[in-house]
Length: 369
Ligand SMILES: [Zn+2]
Image (cartoon, rainbow, N blue to C red; front, side):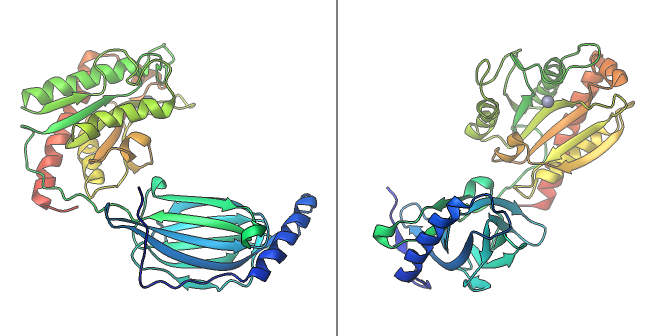
């Protein structure tokens, strides 16, 4: 059950009943002239907000309701370029009587601003207090409802992000719980090289080398797969399959997660190793850097460095995580090298050295989020 308690410091602005009726009429008219692109169909007329607090769970949610004088289409995106922001593109609506900018609770979001995008479209920008995840917000539209005097509405729900976990890493690999994810497997071969090498076979071979080396150093290794299988089950949806991999790490509270893949590109000359991270803890980029610095030492593979990416497995794992792309299977030279057991061994050693370097650096950094 969801207990709702109104926050005491809230400003509530209510729409007038007249506006609701006018909006309904306008909405009905506009739906018959759907092809007239240059005429804005609706206006952003009013905004109100409140915070729902769940006293039991300790969670809270900010709800923003924007009244519009007709139906609109919306699309939301998160960005961090100018501070954490949720931007909602509102198609077929101009900024109407609504205030240019309204202050919000300050804990989940600081303010909402209404911006004219062009003659027929507008934008709603919510400045967030902290960056959130795609799963932390929901946006939807509601139709008008004459019986309750309600006009068309855009609803934005933003959950307060959970507090960041505090990490206290110690140096060394002994007793560390390390999740190793051999990319693809079973019904999913991954990328295939010009000489028919399947990505899933190389990723498993390297993952097994990593496992052996880590266990020799006293670490506990969680493998998402140890044979040529689908982790969730044959022909599962992509999300089920990826979720099954993150679950192995999350359920067992792994210290770190390493996903192993091989890249592919249309240009057969593209090559090199790269490591991807999603900075959800203070340690993801550090983990990527330490692993990539060691991969970069392998002869014959160009160093493509580290990059931020929103891949599912590195985003949805709760611990620092990386996805390493160990060369390009589409590059005939690299495909050949990746098939050599000594190169697979070097790849495994580099990942293990990277993990060792990471724990040393993270321990020096000390406790923190
Ligand atoms: Zn892959």
